[in-house]
Length: 302
Image (cartoon, rainbow, N blue to C red; front, side, top):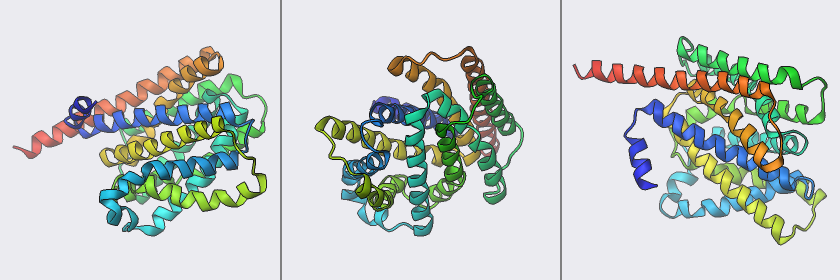
């Protein structure tokens, strides 16, 4: 593993960003799959509470050597805002996982990057042109291909996914701002710190004493979330918000495959058509960004 990480760290920033984004997508989809397994046995608010509690426990070793850096962020307001938005997004995501297949959730969720990329261009002054526009459009078209034949009526699961979209629109911008000033593991600490008290209030009213098996599943969700936060922070360090957003589209084929093997969800033909468009756009972006970075490096050394 250390050899792989060393090899990855020697690659151009765009390739490192793509690597961490894909790992993050795997962790997130697997997390939703576990939630889908247990969401009918225990309330979603309780899942969010225990997931955050376990996540904080597992992230505690990070505080041993970096407590001062991690617990005293430079942008406390943005850190708390990210935590509050993460709470809303997690609750909606988990309710959606209860009612919809993983691939459907992922496809609908792809409406978010369009607005977020535009906001990143205006607020962070990140360029929105060329390969980035092509990748974002490819992702949107691919997601539209998948949604077209399947969504003929509105159900509560779809509403929850749009709740995720609303909560997460600002997150890439917030994360990019934090990536410029904070330790990459800061959010892995602050997200559960913010979510635990927010989730505890509704959990009190829907409390069900979980079995050992359910606690084990929720501990796994906590580990996956903690790892996802750390991995995603590294993606934002090596790539601008627009790049990370475009690479998120690789989550769709991951969700389709995992949904098939875990739940027997058979992906429709359109999922593979749309997934191919999405993958092509994402990897085209990574290639162009890597090429551009090499060109800039070569020019600067002349």
